Amino acid sequence: PARTQLVRDLSGICDRCETAYGVVLQRLMPLKMAYHSRSDLVDAIRVFVADSEVRANFKPSQLCGDAAILLDRLANNLDSLKYSIDIRKISELKATLTQFDNYDLAFYRSFDDFAMELDNLATSLADPNLFEGDVLERMSYVRSVIGDFQDDLAETVRSVQDAKQRLR
Image 1 (tube, one colour):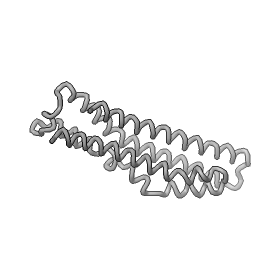
Image 2: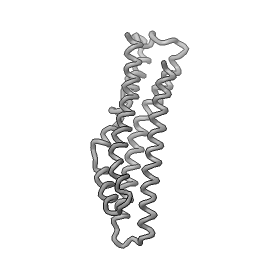
Image 3: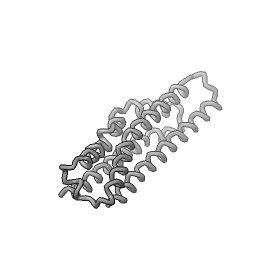
Image 4: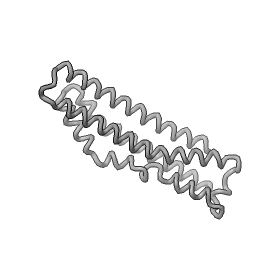
């Protein structure tokens, strides 16, 4: 039962990471659809940055909070979880859970940095005195920032999935 619960908890961590990723991808669609229009892009960025539901998906307690609980259980000599795992794999499991525990804060900070950068770009793009060449450059940069964030997020989700597979 303890081992089954461990697998269920690890699956839950991965599922929450994938869900958060999916929500972000969905919420980025209006931004991508607005790439053609400066004012539409500024409006779409403002809506995205103000979306508290997206940010809530990245709170540490929402993503990998179970990892810290599992680490505590593995440290407890009275918990059956510690004895349901091959002794040779416990250190690997602890390292992976610590990695999970670090991912959630990284996700949260990464999202906040991304949202702040988008907000600054929206402010810049909203400036009516901005030269047309600068507008096009900043709009292109918005595409780049969004693409980089998506790539980083996808890589992190893959890392979480890979770590889970290593523990099976």
